[in-house]
Image (cartoon, rainbow, N blue to C red; front, side):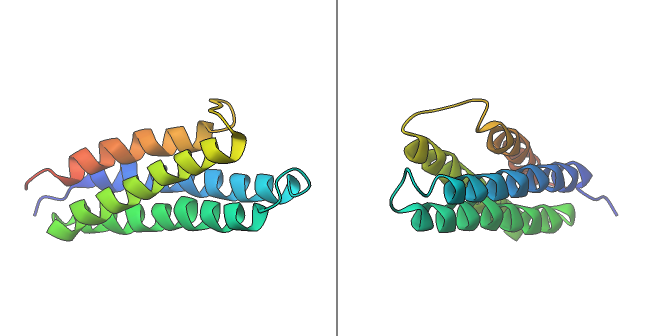
Length: 122
């Protein structure tokens, strides 16, 4: 039986990068509490979008490994959560920084490719 290994491997890599980025941005929001008044909302947002999107993408990759239709839907939802995380990072900073958003950008690249492979038929 044929398996969709590329979608699984790329979603695992994307999930790892997304978790690292989510944790780093949550820590950044906590350390910048003096500058930003409502850092608690940003911290929750970074954790929910960054780590939540990683978990959903990983589940989508596991589903896509067996060529299940739910894999594509979950991969798309996880990808959109990572896009939301990148937007939240830009709002938090007041602009875009490639260096500070590197982990999230790497996660987005991996998850876009994983979503493309999740759409593949057996």
